Image 1 (spheres, rainbow, N blue to C red):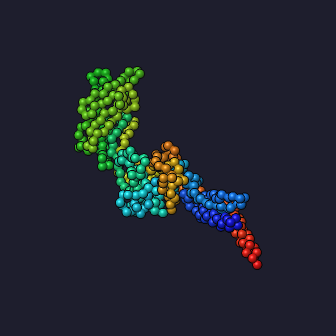
Image 2: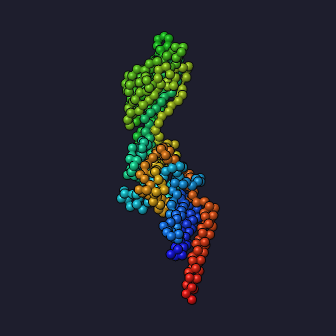
Image 3: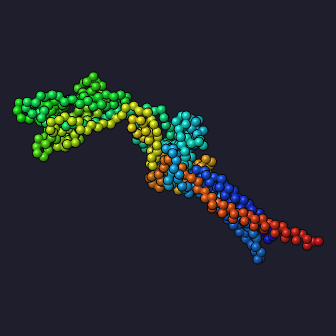
Length: 433
């Protein structure tokens, strides 16, 4: 019995070292595979109960585990949508075949890195057929509240590279200096005119005609003006009229003193603005608060538009797409505007090594990995998203070659055990002669 157990132990040793060599060869073969996680094979002894002083060899068994929680080093690339995870967390992806089927029922797989590029339909897809998943943003760029314990809200990230976009002007600030000498007795009383461009809801260029008419008194200075605003989109219709007076004291000379609303939106001294209705809807115009010099002023003898700022933009073409460290996908347009279109969450679970490993460096959550949760990148236990980067394999070729030498010697030793047992059995057979 003892000699037979020795033979069985030797055979088990051969099988165990063959399994270890298989994992080593897989690791070395994938030493240049981006995102590859090395496999580690461990040996476990089998001990059988023995009695009467005789020892029975139990042999050895192996277990192999993919070390998914280990991270490889990051290398820089030139593609803005080459993505990697720095720290804990995984990128949600789907198989391109499921996305192409268009049934809306895609399985969420997990990956740590990928070289994503837009395909013919605008999906961000890798060469291996993985499509990036994310939460779509609303038209104003905000991300709605999605459930974090399920992948139900995730959609394939689709970028329309031929997209046109424009943003209407909803806010405008006027910083203009009015000549103080125009409100003095004997002045000509000429109206100072200013045309300010804005963009309507369709991205078309329109303009506001802003007119400042001084009040000329019989004597002294009135420090008073009438502000009239007209909209070109409404055929030059009057959309606001206001009476302005300026302070001429030593401490606050030249700043607004009072603003009275004649027509249009009411002036709010707390914000220094009024809301007027242009053809496309309401627009907030800021002229400054009383006592402050950040808006309209009345100084010296020159009419000068000091600073005019507004939001909105004309129609532009999408030029590029980038992903920031928080996982937000931004679309850039040739007009200089940027629009947030998706958010890529990072998926984490208590035991990443318990996930099911599949091909293409993807993984599936399992009962052994624990319940997954979709985090904002950089929040909670997760790391952040790195663009222009790929994650290298975790294989250390030098370490694997060293393990290969050890495995080879162990395999040869087990083969020697089998050879020795065979010789001993031969001697036992020869006793009968």
